[in-house]
Length: 83
Image 1 (cartoon, rainbow, N blue to C red):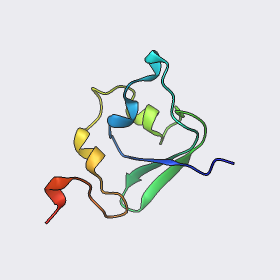
Image 2 (cartoon, rainbow, N blue to C red):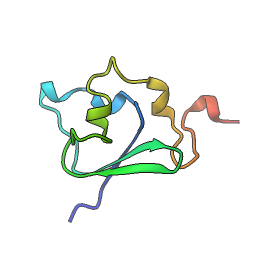
Image 3 (cartoon, rainbow, N blue to C red):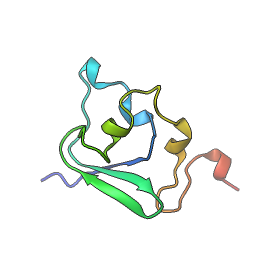
Image 4 (cartoon, one colour):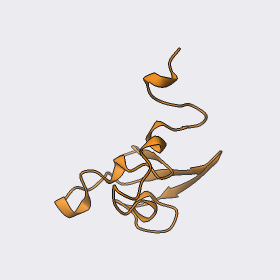
């Protein structure tokens, strides 16, 4: 049984790379963070429903790369946040 879930933040474009047009597909199950302490559970592979990454960021040019850094449950990721 696969208990793996990917977590994507708001308009992060990185999860859309390399793209479904090239035959790439994510593992089943996504947690899509949509705001502070708000998230959606998206079933299937690359769910296109509202509230899921592929709907929010249909291509890399629509996204905001800063969203790749977080926050994830209040944690920001990246060397610019290390002290």
